[in-house]
Image (cartoon, rainbow, N blue to C red; front, side):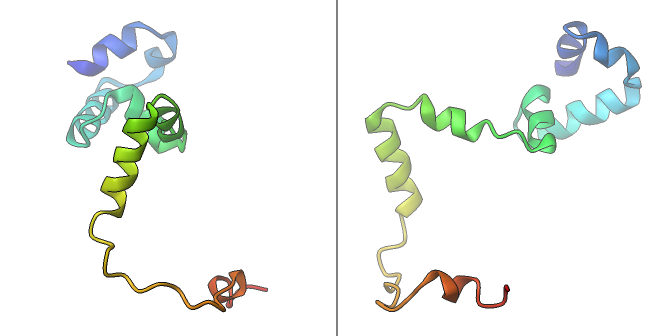
Length: 91
């Protein structure tokens, strides 16, 4: 089991019930993540920033191209568009 390896590395997991550890391992696997990455996701610890920092300039450009794929026909924002248009319902 993927989680057992993680559990052996830290005494913190001595306090995690086996069924909870199994559930975490199952949920992590369903997301295609390691248990460590899944727990970081649940805790709101972003590995995404670190991922982008490790990319070469060419790899980063490829990520941006993929992100923009399919946006060719999106109309541009009006020239008078401002921050107030985004937050119009906030004080």
